[in-house]
Image (cartoon, rainbow, N blue to C red; front, side, top):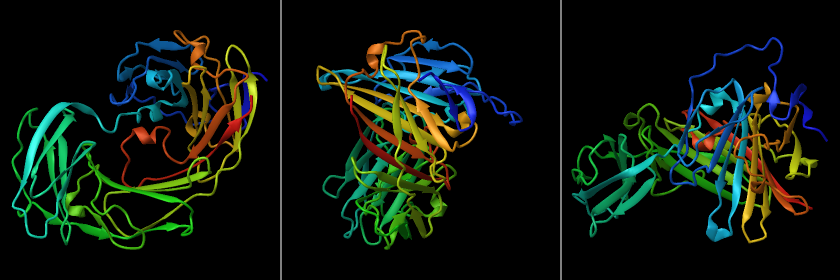
Length: 408
């Protein structure tokens, strides 16, 4: 099988799709800076290929990569798996548009700032206070009223706190820019700064979806993720931030995951600034993909086909994992967006590309013939990098996965 195939009616070399005739041409966005979170493994190799051009390698070992993209392009990067887990590597290959690439950011930046604070004026009914700054969460109690946040970024950041009492109360201090080592002014939870929480009801359809896992948090425009004391319930009131306390860029995030691997899973998430009663609906189960081999050497290149479904129309992502002889793993991820293809295809047609011409690429990072490969296929209505972006007010994302194993 060659590296050229029909992709939704558009003839394309693997991950190199030409613009359809008569297609409106949007201006190329400004050069993106891809920002990886420094708390995760940083790429040890990074390269990109603008459509119709050779691969270009960029210096690795950093959290940021800047370059001039074509309207359609492919990025590829590798990270080392932890040596304690037996080594190996993870390779990501994503074929997207320049506009989509601009959304690839670290939603929770971190730094070296350390701030200390305390809670004062406890009332009889106050059990404890839940606090968050950036991605960190802390608690304070009447007997232990102080708190410390570390690894905060140097940018303005918000402090969010909820008082565990009846009724629940909440406070937000915006744009905290105190220098590292500063002790913040005490948080007076008996002051007018603290407001009663708002409430809303959420339901899930279908109501009998199996093995449902729930998630709920409030994300401020400055990147503080706050998890409410009571979590999330179905059909009964949930706590939320009153609209008058929010600002542009703030969102509440509610999500449900149905199913547990190796079962097929379905996921729905909704992001909103102003709370109101709502019903979230899971999409259908993902269809069954098919697989065949493009090439067995110098590494195993697999090809996946999946019929598209309207509720998962934005991108498809295939992940393959093999065990290494020393007990580690090799993981290869291939992602293709509908915008890259030019439209949502009737069937997704995705292959692991030939990266041997990319400078610095090592075939030992990839799958090998003769070994079983665990696979997971995910299709979604979210942005290709929506887990690495700040969600916007009104966004609803649906995702579905299937997983199994390919015999050698």
